[in-house]
Image (cartoon, rainbow, N blue to C red; front, side, top):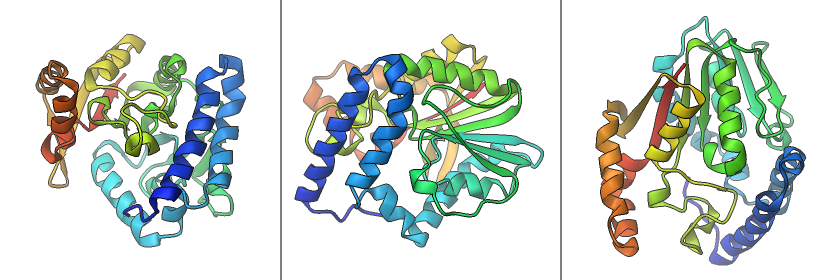
Length: 275
């Protein structure tokens, strides 16, 4: 669903989000554990036309978004699996997965956007401090996040990834979808800044994120690209080569090319790590 807000409404959202994001950027680790939930709840209260809230009010847009996500994720999910989504938003995707998995856990820092819905018995929403993953070690077959990694404080990203790794069963998978820094910023600051200054506390390249996966212990990391709504596995060296080429270019040319339709699609990060 296209954003129909005026420039004034976008700027108001931008100023509010930047203010709240700066609280997170400058907070200590102990402070961030409590602050994550507070700032996200505050943003949704202060920005009533936030896209998350507007999409919640549009069943058609939500259904299309869920269908796109599931068309890719279904290849990894079996009926006997325990599935865990980190940063589930309004939980619409996690609720869809309850039809295809034995148990579904949704881990988030806030329950503000999910208040009032009725969940099936194999679904559970669990609140976290933004780093912890409240699941028994080795109990999850598939972990999943979509547009989450970029919201983590860079000092907390490796810790959360390690906790996801710990929750996975041997051979378990973590499907991580996040925007690429080279074609960003991708948060509300895109209309006003050259780097992310909103709730995208750190945007990554494929190279940066795949190295982080390897550092926490994932034995294999693969990369997927969506081509005409079909996701295909692409050799990692090809994407790393593209990123290396773009990084050698002057900044203005790099941004122009990276935001082009084809290259931005190639750069969009969908990593699958296997324990």
